[in-house]
Image (cartoon, rainbow, N blue to C red):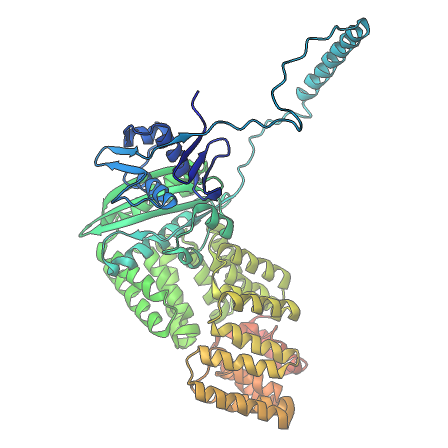
Length: 638
């Protein structure tokens, strides 16, 4: 019998320990590459064909794309062995055929551990005579064991213990890793990234009760990362990875994808697709069906009908849509403007493109936040686009979510907002921003803080590397007056996203609520620097704030911030609109100007008006009848 322990150079391959070691130290190698290495070493000197590898490693019943899965496993083996394919010491490629392990091997003898003091294996002792008492004891033990077995049989067949219902499959989670652009043209990255995002959306609504999908922002953190499945699975808490590559040439696109189970790095499915660009949405539906089958999901009639009804898409419209996604994900003012132009181009080219209408609605709805537009200008357009998207496809979760956002922030139609938010989350519980918006645009405004916090935590589970989501949890704690938790969350978010200015601005606000104005000043300065203000101007403002607080206390601090708010150079949320100035006037005790500013914010439908009932600064105004009247007009009291 051959040894299970092989040595070559300073490597040792140990099947009993299921491990590759170098100079006594374990070398990390995933299950599939490790199995292939065992197979190659055991067949050392012989050609191992790609077909043999396929059948021995994955089995005859599983289809695997040879050009991807086997090549990946071989590449990982070479990395582990530091083997150069151009001058191989271990693994030789036979072009078009397979591979041969060429290094000399020493089969190590199995180690036999002896008991302390033993020098050799002792022969077995002669059997002992069995006494009469022992025979009687064994007789009664036999009948006792038989009685126990009969009792157990009765219990197992009892109707109280039988289970006639099929167990419900547990919910599993999946991350779609960024598809690799194999076109040899970095200008095609937008196409690969857009396909990644579309697959995330497709899978998120596949079987909401049993499959959770990590959001795009967190998935894209792994673009170009050299991390194995186990590490990614641990970081994101996912059961499966979907990874693949895209090669686009003219009007044709080739997609290779594989599904990996993270707990043991098993490649449980792989396939490749060659399609016309116009059939790219159908391709995504095929991948979704394959994943449903491999993860043992049971698709609803609605999901089956949606996948079956996938239509071809106008290639130019799809191109514009992907370009719009690329611009949107820049999260800049210029990016917002360009995304709106591209999404409008997409729907002009294809008037039945529901996804493009939903994306256009999203861009219009959030343009007042990051795009520098007014709500009065963009929110009606967002409503129209969302309504059009849902008229084409009522199963689009994002369409319902954005319509809810408009109903809450612009129409103050709270029953309608609740209905649309819940419908969106029912259709796609993996839509992280659906949880975020439901939390901060519905639950928090009505003081339902525990529910709001729970929704934010769901959003973070789905998108842990999203700076806006992590930051909004801090604000949610702040609105709930849970200041210690708000502080801890902002500090945690800053550790992850050191360059995100909103975290620092919101932390500055929090410090003013707890009376730490020196810390507030420091955080305000960091927010300004990260927002691109001139460092010398920031230093001058910081000194002015410190001096104002030294001479005038909190009142001097607020006066100086009011002065700063008149300048166009301010970070986001730095009191630089009517809503923000209403807070400053309230802090200064100037109720008349505070209400004037609030009325202006109401007339302009500034998005923070939904926070009227929970903003701590306005505690000083709550006893005034004018405040009650505003709350009623916003719909926050009946």
